[in-house]
Image (cartoon, rainbow, N blue to C red):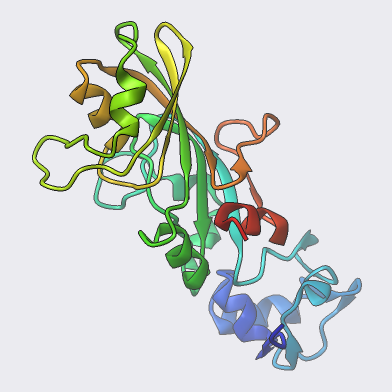
Length: 245
């Protein structure tokens, strides 16, 4: 395991979005940055940015935000988007406003469209992000779809065949697993992340998705106690579950 980095405290807080280094220094002078309950005497001191240190530091009486390298698990609600290029509210608006100024920035791990809810990961850890979205890893993603019409009965075989072609594409999909949950509800596990893939797969067999929720990524399930719009940091076990490590 690599040694946690050493960094000037004012730079660390600026990178976490608490303000410019000058603003952070002013906060410290007013006693708003405390270590073990005591005002910081030297905001320019170098510190070891690890979990143990983070639990000792408070800003304005609140615990320090997660250190760089964070992975968040969010229950994405309907009506918000992951892309800055789409109109409407963003998933990033559900995070504290100062998090928009973090360096490195928080990004979504893949995307869910505005009308899809459920499990979404966000991170500033580029290595973790690229591992999850790498086409070579084939991280499984399980969706629960509500359909406009009842299942015909042959969809599971078609999706599992590895021969299904989506409209406008020239490469067949990897095999996917369908589980019928009700006449108009199904769970679909895919190993890719093509544009609107689940919706287009059901369209290819003559059906229409009226509601879609992502339930899991890899071995990580969306917990029942995480309400829409809420999020929490993912621990090492959760990260390993996503990647199947």
